[in-house]
Image (cartoon, rainbow, N blue to C red):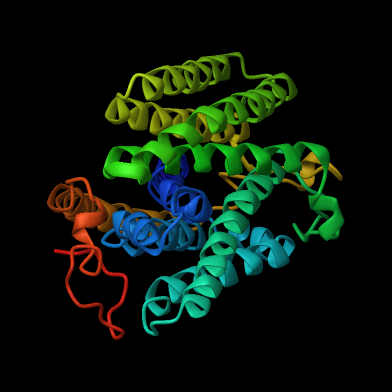
Length: 347
């Protein structure tokens, strides 16, 4: 196996990790008004992701950096052609992060309500646009002989890409609902479990349609395996969630996200950005890659630091593994409310 193939695989792993981890963050943010009828409930929901959401986004930074270093031509064409969607994603992620930190700075219902809206939008927009972006990458975009994108924003808003956006939106929402049911007690848990039932059906319909379309559009018979795995995982999620087995249900939603990502990257390889103008103008793991020396240095760096990052995140999830409820929120527990506190989790 060539180093270019190894780095294509590693980038696929990085994106998979990002979608699995930040996916439930997006879901929690999108569902905040639905599961949080009171300020205490909303604080409970936010505190479930308080210790991990920023760490989860590290996977995005590493995936983007690895793409830039390993496949600079891919990075250049992708970020120039997809400039507006990626800018919207970046702005949404910034707004969401600011909202997490600022919503508890002033003891005002209106202040918190406005920041809660920012959390919802800052979570839903990336969940939708990541699906649109990756669907276009797999389907291909108009590139000229210099690998320059020659389409417009409307080119990216095609039926296949929009279905991909709805698929990731519903899948991440389901992932977040199951995560909330797993990590909370009381009313938040009950509401999250109820939402997961409807979201499971939506994810099966949109995700199933998107994966079947992807399978039929590419001559890759082996991708039928992850398609079937994703379908089975989503059905299993609905069943196990109804039985109150949130831990297994969460594992299955994560499995479904992995299967979807494997399907997309499997359908794409060995290309990294196909051209719909002329197949010869497309980018692949050979003509988009850095020099062998660069890839060799990157490989050693990855071997040393990847286990450290994984171990740190595993430790974080272990430390903050317990369920949260209204009793964990100081004001709800009868303690005086503080107007200078942030929404960091109660430790």
